[in-house]
Image 1 (tube, one colour):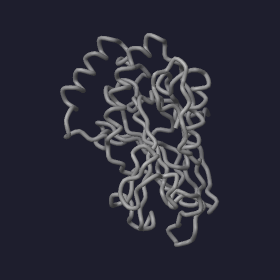
Image 2: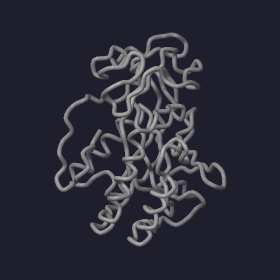
Image 3: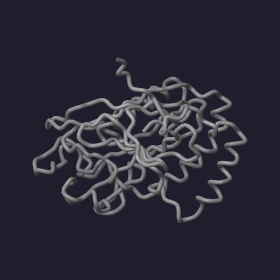
Image 4: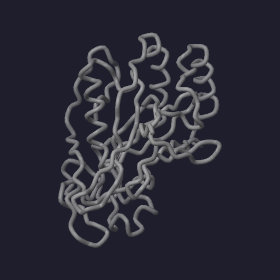
Length: 274
């Protein structure tokens, strides 16, 4: 019996990207400009890819036919951003059901209570997290999270992939590896899978694994660039909503220092890596 998970598109479709053909891309960009411009569109309305709670090993993918569970996915990360969310009330005690008290849409400056420079905020320090049972956690009370717009094969609009703190190290290492190879994160297809992990408090959870599928051809990268820029524009101002995240309070996530980002040769995108 072959237990190796398959990399699939929702619905079992072939891993093809019609949007990488110029005529198709031009039509898509025109539709986006016509239908998504203005204040009525929210990134949070996009279909979502979630990592389920309780250590389950499948992604939950929202589709027009309903939610599907898949062990692996493939697509293109067309836009990303680092963000932060802080609740005064202990996360897991109902806090995730209301907006955060303080958020940052860039991971550097917070808006709300307490607001200000994230690096100097006491709630962004490790060891400030509080577990649902009231005990002290090793993580940060202000959660460092990532939001990725992930374009699945055959789709015109991306899914919103919420990368929790426990998977942010894997994502940062993946984007850094691409950068070292001279490629932007959106210059390649990305394969997603889930590995099982256990927190220091004995809680099992799923951690996202990121692997490169194939490097896009230079012509494909050129066609995709205006779409990438459009998705960045749509993602940047959107409100941070962390309700899609499974937060493991006592897991020590990767530290993201607010430092100058390296200049990538041959790539105009200024936000690589986190």
